[in-house]
Image (cartoon, rainbow, N blue to C red; front, side, top):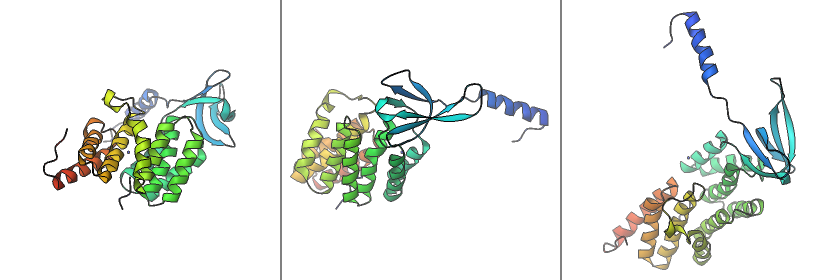
Length: 259
């Protein structure tokens, strides 16, 4: 069964001058921004979440020293921050086929930042289920998707996508179709979806192709594969898998053409 699966220069004085200039010119690392329900937004470095408390490392005024500030997670509405390198590395592992390594890394991240309302943390939580499924751990994938839905109840599209991926892997195509139909309802109305929605359309059309191919609707399957590969190629794994499926489908059915 197929598993559904980012010359040295002379002169001491000259060298010292260049080094100082480089330090002065280097842009400072952007601070994380934490928006709150009450009170002004806070800035610093988010270092983790534990016991429903967000820990924010802040610089002490007039000093190089730092302190850790505790903020109730329930009072945090949004966190704006760059994707941490650990998340980027885990996503890259998954893209390269190291599902077990990706799952282990994502497991650590989701435990350290559970419930953080940041875009990357939400994606990491959903991606954990993807990694476990790609590694063949269906029970672990289901638990991860269920946990994601409870942790981020507002992210219904991502939750449906994860459960649809699991349903396709288990051959529960009707369940998958129901979930995917909601996700793809508006895809015909845009070719430039918002950044947060774009990868979901790639994955959704690939999975819908799998569903329709299983039902014998080769024309519909081909249309969805081509949408994932060419119209919404925003997820490289889904786009690549969809193109391969489309090529195989047309090879088996010579008269089949794109709509």
